[in-house]
Length: 267
Image (cartoon, rainbow, N blue to C red):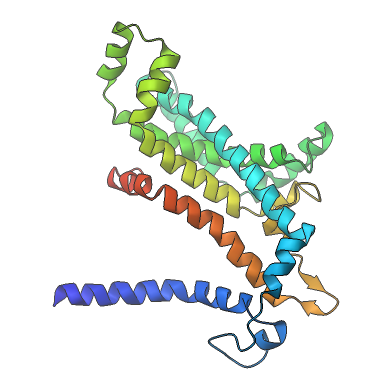
C-alpha cells in the first residue's frame, strides 16, 4: 500500500512538472488568435508556421548558433582551467588554500548584475564587445569556481597512492593526469561540464549586455518579439521549445554521471 501511495505521489509530482512544458509545446502549434482566444487543450488549427519562422529567419536561428558557440567555448575553458586548480586543492596544502577556495565560491554567490557594467566597459575598451569569446570568458567567472568545487570533491575520492605509483612507474605528470587520473574522475568531469553548460545556456543578463548583433544569443532574441501587431506568442512558444532541446540532450548524455555525482554527495 505504501509503494502504491509513493507511486501516486510521484506520478502527480511529475504531472505537475510537465504541465508548463506541455502548455508551451501546445502553444507552439497554435496561431496567435487561438492562443489569445478561448481555452483549448489541443490546437484547433494545427500549424507549423511558428517553427518555420524560426528555422528560416536568420535573426532567430542565428541566436541558437551564437548561444551554442559561446556555451561550448565556456564549458571547454571552464573545465580546462578547473581541472588543474581542483587537483591542486585536493592534493596540496598551501598557505591560504581554504581561504582561496572559499573566495572562489563567493564569485559564484554574487549576482551577474554586479559584473555586467565592469565587463561591458572592459570589453568595449579592448574590442571584445559583441563577440562569442566575450560571453564565454564572462561566464567563466561563475562556472570555474563551480567546476573547481565539484571536481575537487571527486578528486579527493581518488587515493593519493595512485599518483605515487604512477610516478614510480615513470609517468610524467601530463601523461599520468590525462591517461590515468582523468578517466578515474570522468563522472566528475561530466557533472561539472553539465552544470557549466546549463548555467551558460540559460544566463541572460551578461549575454545580453555584452552582445548586440553578431553574437546575440537566443535568450536575448526571445525578449524582443514585440512587433507593430503585438506579441507573437506562437513564435515565442516555439522558440522556447527549441531552447529546451539542447539542455534535454545534455541531461540525457550525462544522466549517469549526474547520478554518480549525487551518490558521492558532491552535487
